[in-house]
Image 1 (cartoon, rainbow, N blue to C red):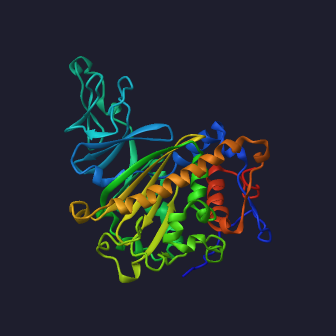
Image 2 (tube, one colour):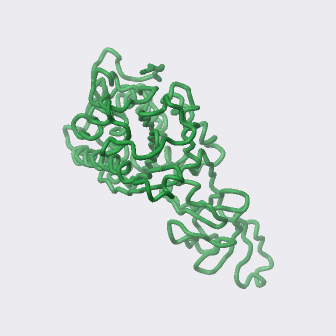
Image 3 (tube, helix red, strand yellow):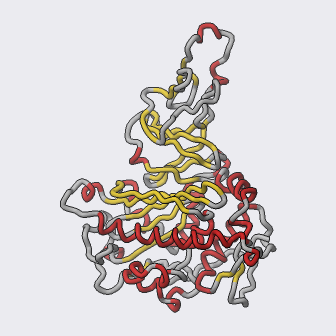
Length: 396
């Protein structure tokens, strides 16, 4: 079933078949990339990890958001996040991407110690010689942190950024025709990682985002995927590229979302029979992509490194009973989207060099099959976040 939802305002003429893309410089300019870091990634909730990674007090994740080093720690009263900067001489507090701090956060340089719960300075060598100093002015800088269904998000803008649910709620409602109970049934907070790949791609993050939001290319570069989901190769069924809000059905005879097409795993607990043999994929701006399937979920996290380089981490999430059972082979499920990822990132890298071509100075075009999600949802969101007037064509 396809439900057409109201479109946000667009600067495109609905009578035109082709919609302009952003001009080429938006995919190559380090100045524009720096503006994106300040106006988008530094002001919105960014996915950084999963609570599964941090089960014990003192467990931490080290991440970078908009060029800012952040640590997320498991404190006694829940998750806390701080800038990864010692108030003494600016040393990094955590030197690895993950680990355990112990009972407090201790600077590896001069051993200043901070509380897990509130970042307050607790002790420092030779402190008795500084009795005139007020410790309360030397606490770690806090960063807003929130959890949604087992996923950890941070926001450098603090309380000004609202909540995670407020940010992604509209995206989920659009994707699922307002039926958020679909997400609840998958029990994302209970799933654990059964496989992970990290990819480096020589392409601007928006090229990759645009790729993930259309299937005009699917019949060309994803033969394995369209064999699994024939709708992705049917321009008639894809229409203007809007979501099929009831999911995309597997091909007849395809029981599982796997390389073999066979059902290798039991359905996730909590799903209904109507959830079987369907695929749901959705962008959660600004840096995540979530896929929901009958027996697992797939989580993509995008990290824009520069104007021309993006890191992508993909995790396959399964029921713990499946991961802990050696009788189940997860590789059949993992390899299908691993292949799709490589195909998508290769295609994105094909485009990047020509973003600086004189022919692409004013950008390219979107065909009708690409227009709904990219042209009428992604571009207006991007222009609004960047402060580009709605009257502008593309990103002019």
